[in-house]
Image (spheres, rainbow, N blue to C red):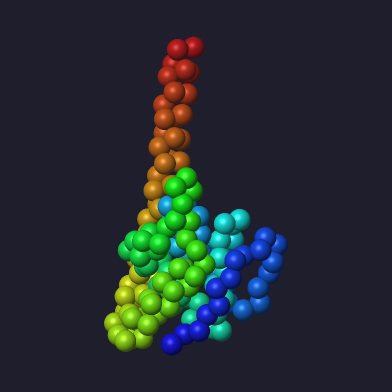
Length: 146
């Protein structure tokens, strides 16, 4: 079983071990982040591989709604550090029971995330292209009027 440490992130603190952050406030609580924000926990692992496994496990737990069960608060929902830690541990434990299958799922999620980023990049470029065509159209209309 992979060991990890989960703490509340302190702004300005740097970490030497492989790490990532987990959002702890709002409806996206449990969402793993590469960069810190004011309302997050930090997860440190012994190896880069363990960090990647935990990152994608956390993503799967957040998307699957497993963190949402523990949300507290009426105005700004949040997840406690203990609930977050226990959810990650349960996810790891179930992953250990079916380690091969879990690794396949994590790899599949990694591939899907990579593809999603590529497609989002294409969509962003298409939006820029659309704006360029629209502006060009209006420039042509203005030069024809003059």
